[in-house]
Length: 470
Image (tube, one colour):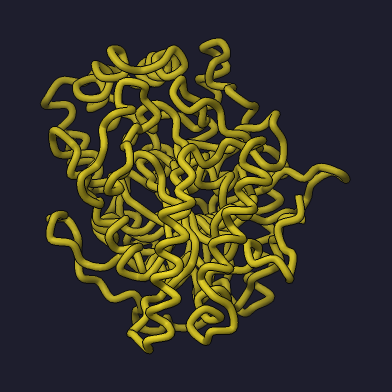
């Protein structure tokens, strides 16, 4: 798939679009119309966007152009076309979360992340698909249907932000909004060959006004909003736009987007084989990232972060036991058959714990966080696989229980980081070490400590390699 055509605005980066719109080299209407034309061209085959907002987007583009002409102060994404996932509130739109029963839940106000995108001047061209209850690494539901990977319909586009990843990978918007509790930004970015950023919890405000209750404790601690894009520079722009204050989220923190310079040489830990079940192509891609960083002057060592397997197991124990109490009854009542089967396989993966055992897990978590903080004193940056395996087959989580358990095992690198809870997690696709003709994306995943998403951007500036879909 060709996703970069110099004369077609849908293929431009958000950085380039924002600059060109601000200087009147192009209009927002031209950029938005190009994205809408691209949606009309490719979305029927991919079903990434399930609500195209053409009239609203063109009206917003015209307003953006009028603001430029009046010399008004412009936001970071002024006039730039973006997409928003259907599991967050957007005024006047249905917050379906991929569930038939929620098709008429119409938001009366914007969630913080949508409000912040609008404040930054972004133009929302559509809403992207998610699995029912945003609870799979596959994007297929009874309400909106299946979303497909732009590389191959045989492979998952990832989930739960599979619509977001498929849309941005195929040029339907410059930046896609996603969210991540169990890899829902990073895994779709991996599967569709784009960049994704899971920010530190508390960095981007989150709240759905349409919700009937607040998020349970593990979601408060681990769930985040964040951007997907075709370049790391665009992730930075998306983060800056999304991370503005909103009093509706009591967990939001006023953390600067840029931190103090790191002492050089910067220590980097790479772990090509953190669990021992990694596909050779996956391990080769992580080692390739390590070589590139070493060539750029980083102090690279091959070493596994502390208590990694314990952290992955802890994520399942905490999250699955909370799912038993909160999410499982909802999925059993309102979910589709695919989400119900996935839920039962997921619940079977971790033992049922009583209240005292859950509290002990939180004590264990603090010890793991401490071990990671000490580790990252020496290695501020960690490179891990996203998944131990190449992107899964389409709907592979609907196969027999043995297959699904192996699938869950493969995601341990993805989930271990969530138990630690601190630091930014930037997923960057590398296409290296594959067989001739194999166009599947391969992983390289950069973790930085304690709110320092800017570290990933600096590493990108020093050691980036072309990672374009072509």
